[in-house]
Length: 438
Image (cartoon, rainbow, N blue to C red):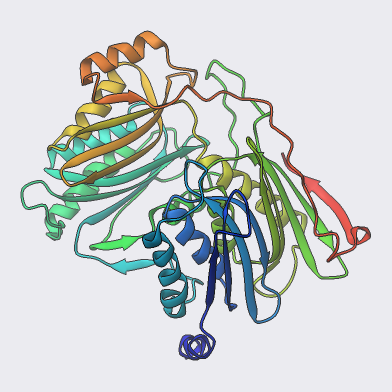
């Protein structure tokens, strides 16, 4: 009944989207005015990031019953958005579809699909894990259509979409699904792991993969930092996000400030985490420089209360830090372009394993018979990959097939960006610095 009333209100007050290429010299301005509801900020950010747009600045205001946000966006080359098809798609998604999105409380965004079978995996990260998973799927005649794999704090999570190797249709036979579950569960088991690995084969469905990965890693408690003894290198704390929580007593908000290295989809990752932790962003600013991003949010829990305990503050800080770090591009970025074929992913990951490479993150996709896969790799100790190893792998896979997309990422001093509290809205004297867990 609540959803039906909300739909009626949104029909009577449809969202208004203005896309402006004249006001700002360097970016396209996207302004969204809409009836407010929990999760709408994430929905808007998700539409923009799914189009691979870069959000350089954002101004968020959703006090009361109305949501008014402004985003400055560019394409990946730093240009304004001038493609009429992209502009119309943004308007369609934010104006038409937004009226019928259900509330996000208690849901994971699963929508019907008949294209593939979705497999979700979480467990302890270790060298060669993805290779073993791909080998099992290849032996069971499962074709990997697309997949995304994240690792963080010695935990691993993956969402893998597969079809039958012969028919290219979703796998629905219960007996075959049970075999897939059992064999993958064996791969994920770790004798020294105090947490149980999980393995879910869903009915054919479409899930927003990146949000699901955040939810899976959060449920696996990857935000609990572990000791990295025996890895042969000291953990570098200088590149960790700087996160602080402040109290705004007069207005009844908790203010969250975050300073970190800038990267694509950073805003999605932090807003996704706050939303799934049942916090509402009432006001906020996002400002990015060449290397650094500054985010500031005025939040309350969905029950209307600010954060009011030390344990809750620490948990929010840890979870936001994890959300920023999960998609951090650790290691050397390798991009594979090849004709898709059965067992391709199994062969590639086996070659990586045989050359003592660890896959820290991976994005797997196929379209029109072509495979485009991106891997972020380090050596077994988490250090930079030796150039001789890269040359050896390229010879085994094929020079034109495997490309080194960019130089290996190393910690760099962060460039300052202007961190500006919304001082005109709220007086600085009402803030009290609680604690920074960074």
